[in-house]
Image 1 (cartoon, one colour):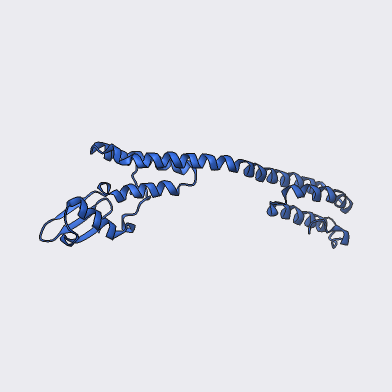
Image 2 (cartoon, rainbow, N blue to C red):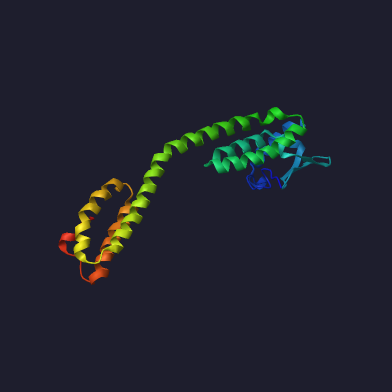
Length: 205
């Protein structure tokens, strides 16, 4: 079932700036603010009680504030998956404007969505080397874990320590990876012989 900005939870009518809603409703109805006796933001429409008159219902989509809400939602998207999901929601919203012969009203959404999509693509390209390096660090950690578990004596651990330290320099910017291996090396030493670390084994300061 298709969702709109409200049913999807993207916009909470109760959180809309009430004074701005009042001003836009007054402008829409071509009345002064003091002619609005009471106004409430209901789940799917605005309830407006006019002075010495019956109440009226106004659609949120008739307000420019609604377009602004869509633009803010687009700006909050931090991944392409989120942006695509929001795109489906805005497509449902667009149907209302199409049915009311106001297709141009959602053009700002189209422009903002395209700009955000381009921004996310550029950001993803910039992060590719970083993610590749992080993944390499994870694989390096797994490989050394296997090597450490294969060591059967302290002499073997001492023998591989210089190479382990040398390679760890490549991942110095990933302290959680290097720290985990250093800790594992020390734990492995104590597991093998239940003896204190030698003074010469401070390979990982």
